[in-house]
Length: 369
Image 1: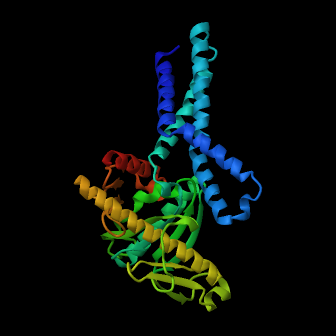
Image 2: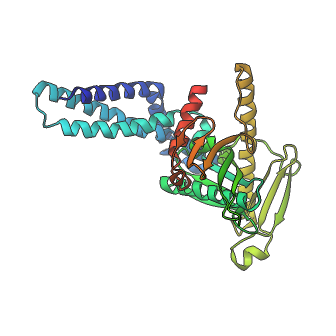
């Protein structure tokens, strides 16, 4: 048998053992059993709020327990195949060994990356907002290009996307937009996208064909659902404005003040939602968004305090640091300003091929910590 294949299999088995221990597989497995017993008991749904908390916990646990169980069982298969090939001297089982190792390595790489998203909110859905910067029509067009990029990324992953708010610019593109992206670890993957994104290109809106630099700011916050531990006095702390929804939607949506804008008076945070015909539903979604924003602000304050104690720098939030450059002229590349990750063809990136950037940010974040 090829020594390289044997070493690869042993390396995979060692990594599985380390991951099993670091992720407390035994503890998580025990907890899933406990929750399953509670869910099967009579009267489980009598307290809807308490039941939903347990269901959410189970969903988060399964994101780790299910693939880790597959890895542990697969490691046993690898060991049996290795022993059989070495003792019998037969090479008939080598293709099966190689394919098993390749399959397990893919799951292992994914789970190791997922393990980097250890914060409780990392497994949540994400609210992603885009705001066009200075630069007129070019920046509005760039903001819409970014919106399409994230929508395509979510589509590639099979995530659900809901456009909550969209404000179109006069000539082309958008002034702003907010979407909710739901999928396993949506926030964990996207949290590093917060900041300014810069585009350099020959402007399609400049008759002289000159090169323009455009900016758009991205902000990502976690959807913590109804269990977000953020206390808000909706009557005293928040101003609510209603307005008519813009864009397509038929007679009802354009003639009724169904859209909701909430302003948190102390922080100045503003959120708005107009995707539903029902004002009540828009209000409920906007309140969730506001809680998510305020949670994010508190997290960034804590991160800044920890960074100050370590003598480092914390992440700069919405509209601050330029996090990525997309250059279409004269060179062609996309490069992350923090991690240094660079690709020579920005086309696929703008079409949603973001995983390289998202994964490099997670690994960079682990190294920084």
